[in-house]
Image 1 (cartoon, rainbow, N blue to C red):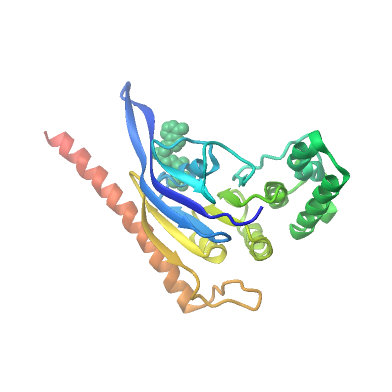
Image 2 (cartoon, rainbow, N blue to C red):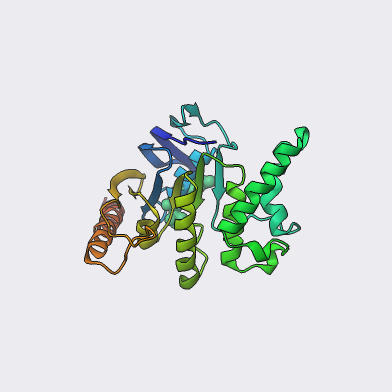
Length: 283
Ligand SMILES: Nc1ncnc2c1ncn2[C@@H]1O[C@H](COP(=O)(O)OP(=O)(O)OP(=O)(O)O)[C@@H](O)[C@H]1O
């Protein structure tokens, strides 16, 4: 598969929840519009609870929108599909399978009904390439519980990419890792992104991570989530491997601009909530 243009058009999403014993509808996303070019790496940041994961789950086809549409290369998303690979914060590797079997599993599943030698050898070739890219050569015979958190996530990424999806969706994939492992993962994944031309949508709380890995950073405001602002990383200084140089005044300034948007959208929400509550107690 190639291409991977994602078109998110006028998406609204709400959840039905219980509040003071009554069912109420809580709007979570409101009129989200994003156009993502093939191969673009889009990072979604914003206050906790603003709807980042919900947006990703809508693109994954794991949630249904109340209104609006999402399409990949013109095909409307109606549910999960092989054109999208997903990596979550928690590993989803099968514990009873080795790293190798986990990686090749979904690809083998799709060719098992019609397994010509050529297809099998292509699947093995692709799996081997991803094992090398993710630095897992010495771990293929291990089981998930024998891996560190970072290795597990590398195996999850390899598994998500083995069928060459058009779009890779990543929801806080390094959120549970320590700072040092995260840093290593950023290098591994930057290299991967340079080699694989997959379109990426990546949710994170970590603004530095967003800047290092993304072409664009989308800040969602909260309550309900809307696109507040979009930043592009193209003018930042990079080293010879194309990795953003963090120790640079332009980087600090850029990071501060994004943080200030997040702070402002969070403060607006907190202030709005507080004023509403005060108003209610006064009447
Ligand atoms: N299945 C659900 N049922 C009811 N409410 C939900 C459901 N899933 C999410 N929500 C609510 O939708 C809002 C957005 O949740 P979501 O997980 O998308 O936010 P987020 O920005 O990813 O949060 P965080 O940064 O804390 O992970 C939250 O208020 C959450 O409680």
